[in-house]
Length: 232
Image (cartoon, rainbow, N blue to C red):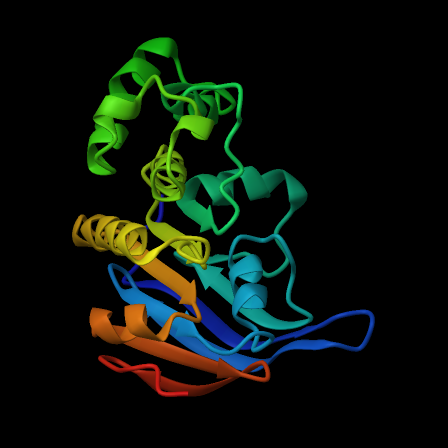
């Protein structure tokens, strides 16, 4: 488990792609345990590249990334599932299983990790309560609104009680009301002590949060303010 005060340490990280595209340039960042930080910037600024590096979907070309003291910069393939049990991931694309109910979608993430049935029956209702979907347990994704589907995704991301949530444009496909509901749930999760990294281009969300704002531009950090706004 990860119990370090500095939950994420990024030192001199660059990401260069084979086609010559520069994803990130010499990034230095520290995210403390329990922080809620927004990573913002225009399209192509490097936000999603950074998110992918944090979950080991990609590897840095240079530099190191430490999560809870664990250097994941050159993580072995066999260790990636362990890392991802400690980092909950929420993307814009829901990726729910259409033939399974809400309960079954959440349970599936536990089943593939080998959780016993009794544990699943106990944990899934708790997660549904956190995302206020107790009455939707036996509905299918097609029967849910976009906001409700994203809340199922958040519940699924919480199955292993991760220390970090990486949410990459989690409200990109949602209307204002559903956006507010998703952000409120992320804030609630953060109050439980979970570190939350919100990757977004939504200026209104960031400015209403009043929390840390890290601005990327052309792959570089151009601003990092503890209680800031997104002004670009």
